[in-house]
Image 1 (tube, rainbow, N blue to C red):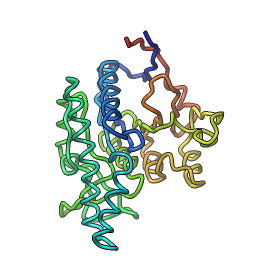
Image 2 (cartoon, helix red, strand yellow):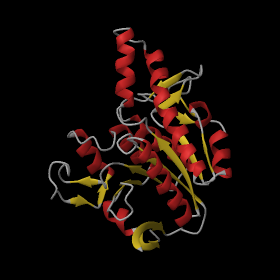
Image 3 (cartoon, helix red, strand yellow):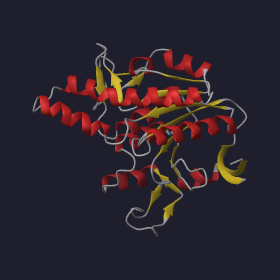
Length: 277
């Protein structure tokens, strides 16, 4: 028997939406997709009151590989063609994860960019413009499934063209979807269990940061910390959307980002969950 950790909230017991983003750093191959599906299966079993919207990136290094392929054809590829090519990486991840979930018997579905519904309006009132959630496909899928898998990094324009949101854009798209769905929180799954005072890959003794304010996280991003994209942090701050930065290891610590770093930890409690090996 092994003890794992489940994060609960004060309003637990009522069905709620949680947006959970899996980045390319954890989607490294077939075994990683299977592990991600197992992680989601366990989450669905441990928290049946949660509906999971899972935002996935392309497999690790896939975006760079696709860009190199484009540049072998034309030195400066057009943005529309390059975004379309990039989108194949995210859609592949959606399909593979959805298939692994299907094989495990998890009620789930994978959506494409247009079904997901992140779209730039024709009249941009924000500078820079920010896509918003439109349509009912995603909401209908959430109502019918425990897990809905959608592509990160991408949105569409009014003319239906696919548009990328820039490097690190999967974090941004996950936050935007969480805001649009009025999700309880957005969890960003990384290859490290949250923030540290120093890079844990370089210093194994670096101190883990349990909680940060949005302002503190943005300051770290401006100093070069690329753990969470600055656009994602800013959007979450404006909407007061709580972020949880974590790994797939339920036994590892995590970092909560909120308006008040003290409240970010006090509002949550940790309950041990025993799961069979």
